[in-house]
Image 1 (cartoon, helix red, strand yellow):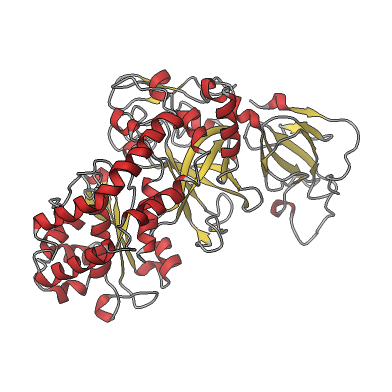
Image 2 (cartoon, rainbow, N blue to C red; image 1 turned 180 degrees about the vertical axis):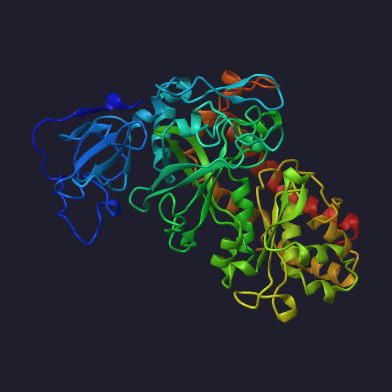
Length: 578
């Protein structure tokens, strides 16, 4: 697809050319890889690229289409002139017939804004729709009416540098081959939807993933990838699917050890999730969601949890590229599982219960890891004996969890979109409450449907076997109600987390981290429901300066200044605020 940007360059290179690495008999070739003379990243000017072998007698082969190179690929003979976006992968074949590891590098130029709507070798149609007839029309390009606008293009160029870039590189067939074979079918064609035939569920493919951020982050690793999420997998509802990166020894390392969220964040991962922003996004199937598009909601909820000292999944905005094609803004996030528990709280991962809602089992609460027994015992309690409840529940943290969801008016909860964690052992940060520990701890997840209607009232939610069902029983207990009321007063007092000043400060910190980057998302997906697949209602050409800022201004001028008083009055009406 990008071959035109690469030409063989004659003559010798100076300055950046690397000398071939001498043979190291203690290190087999299969544990080494070729070296590129220029690191991956955003590139502003053409350059010449040298590929140095891992041994002085090997032969290098390379590809430019994302596929893994073999001895049948292009043989490297002389430096390459790189003048546009280029994805290169290289391997060395030794004289003994062995092969090195594959080296991968993504060089992204400004022309990523102008890539073809019909890239060579990519299908014109994606997978079949699930709940309506037909197939999804493929969409690869950015809207030229935006990218050719001089003012908007400058913002996009600045936006490319504003947040980290995640470049996923692989054989395009692994994503887009129209086959039902579980070993060869494309994961973007058969997405494993939670309704219908589920075809593609669990399919996993090898990729190289790079992450770079102007020198602050520099990561390249091989891993597995699969489609992630629930109804966001349905092609008719959402063309921009979430992805999950899995680190396994069969692909590369069994655990990624790199601080992808910065030095203050966790440093090792078995899995990372690229969350898509489905609810309240421009590509959403429903017009009201598109009108409310803001890409800060979910991260606001997680960061607010962090400010209250609650456990949370670390996340950050990133740009995602697939074989050099811009795929949009995603939220790179930790996946909550037993490994997450061990990393954050210590102890043995085998001792943790990780409870979540399984949509494929009728939104039933299940143990994603460990046992459901302790959670079932907690949910069966009537709430009258608070001391008994505290044996299995961190009550004060649960109060914060409920207040945050109620205040934010979370309408896509709690029949799903939450986690509960419990440590049955004695190790780590907390053990069983019976042994002096903290009991179950609840975490927010997928909070894209918050801050919608300023009058939203979810206080009557009462889902059996879920957090609201437990809360409705506990709020009848005078001791619990007094603690709940006191905490609301504390959080709504001057300087408290629920005050307009604190809410807006956190919201703005997220907005200003993507205020230029969001123009790329608009160009990539803002016209999807207008020009590609309107689905139920014809969309607009959603952009930043009109639609995004309209919703931002609504939140800043109407929603945030009024929401706290409305929430407090809702609590008084229920008799819950003393």
